[in-house]
Length: 107
Image (cartoon, rainbow, N blue to C red; front, side, top):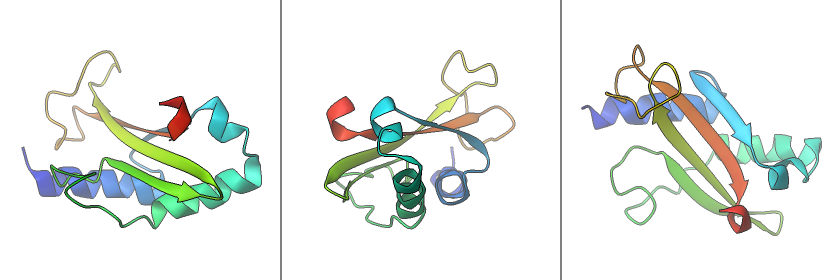
């Protein structure tokens, strides 16, 4: 498994919302469309990856403060049917990525 390839695919999803699906929780939606757009931009430019929040170097998790709310984003890897975990997250042919945006209090 290539950490560099996984990181590149995760960064693509996180920064462009392409290469997977994106979901938001009701708490994120309740912030309103303008705030959600600012939040998507904040996630796209997030670079505070460190050993504490990214121990495997895959850029699949982040937590930060956004307009007085604690926000989490998490990328998960599924098989092509979205039923089980991916057999190889570095291979987009067998992996479907999902990024979920949520308020920390919803976790």
